[in-house]
Image (cartoon, rainbow, N blue to C red):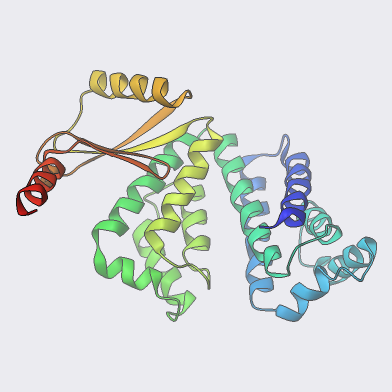
Length: 272
């Protein structure tokens, strides 16, 4: 997002925080559902996006338009957030869709926090991301922008219903059925990272040839914490193909200490 949109979403986040303060988990889940529904509507309505972000109109005129359009369809809390978004100055109309998706995601994670499930939601998102990454056909279906959203929702319902937190289900169902999804595995990974940041830590994705003991995980987390100067949580995946050692990814940085990688490097050197 460009500067004006970053300022705008900061103001909208502040207002969302005011609306979320003290709210119960069910109320926050409902608020998130409403904000996701606004994002979907705007995604399919270019004219409406332009009207709600029209820089030539006064802020209160845009807020009044939002009130007329959504007043009978949203709760007072959701409507207040929508009006706040409409009052802001946006760099481009498309940013409204991204803003409402971001706000809905934050409301959903607020619900996880209120339910005491933030850590388990983060873990469920990570594990589902690994499932998608390990199933080429599932990844293809979920990443296919031409596939009907209804079909994706039905598939996700079969995979998730009764198996994960309502928060995890809400996030995955809404994000993975978006019209501009892109790579499904990456989208789930971003959700997991947002949940991790909400818990006040960065996340290291670790691939090991064998399962790590609790003591080994703690030592690795401590070492990474000293390297990066902040609390680091671990999401560990066992993959025998790495042969030995570890592959550690923190953000965009990858530390590949696996035997498989060292063998590959040696092979390239011999070939050269």
